Image (cartoon, rainbow, N blue to C red; front, side):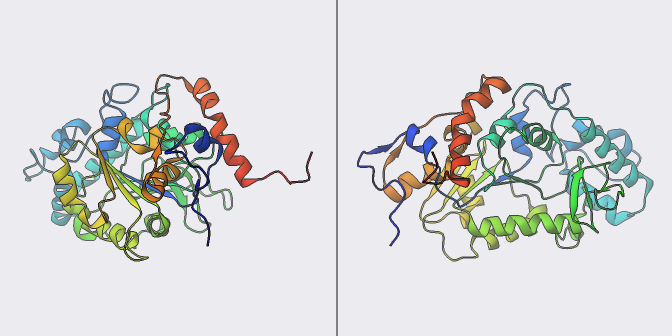
Length: 353
């Protein structure tokens, strides 16, 4: 029988030093992001002050009023996805629909990430290559944070479950990358990922790119030790998405040890009701703010840190990622964690000098 991790430690607390130097748990931490995550990451907007919308204020923030005034549809105080579906069902080839789609793409494509480290940088740098971050958001700021940190540390797999304005792909050669660039195999321009779906046609298995993203997520959820749902409200327009996630999370039977974490400004009772099928044996955490949650307080060791109280019944020391540091200082602070991970992947031969 394999002994539990850290079982040789007789103390009541597993220390930061032990967690940093001994990365162990290979199972993934899966993070699901909704619009509330981008709003929290950029409360003052992007680098130019452009706000990040949610579906209920989407029309106002993106500036669709003048276009929608031409339609005979009431759009004030309505969820945008429901509004879009009504426009689509009325006439899927209408000029109004084309103008709406063009305006949305232009708005999100214009968003620019700030120069200093953001919440999204801290999220990505607090996870490892075994982990997965899957976003429902169209804004490109998570992708931009991923790109600028890509060569600094091993980062989690990044998935775009509803497409993204920055992402394109080549169906023939299974490549993806920046929208507008070329496939390295056939040199054809990447096909933009699809953003907008009417509710009645939101089938994640129909679109080549989206289908591939969901397959990776389902596999990760099958094997995950922890899931964090951050700022995603599971709207009724996404009922198929929630069902797919629930099925994958439960695929290997009852989850008795794994932890579900929720980062949301909603009251805990509402969260528990909304996500009850993802919670087992009372192993859940709820926080209003990302920086109160498990990942940034145990960067790159979130699963190990969750394992300690859940399996060993011990306390675990926190070592929060420093929010005030610039990139150079931040990478220096992270270097002991990254070096320990590299030793785990490429251990030094015992007879080496």
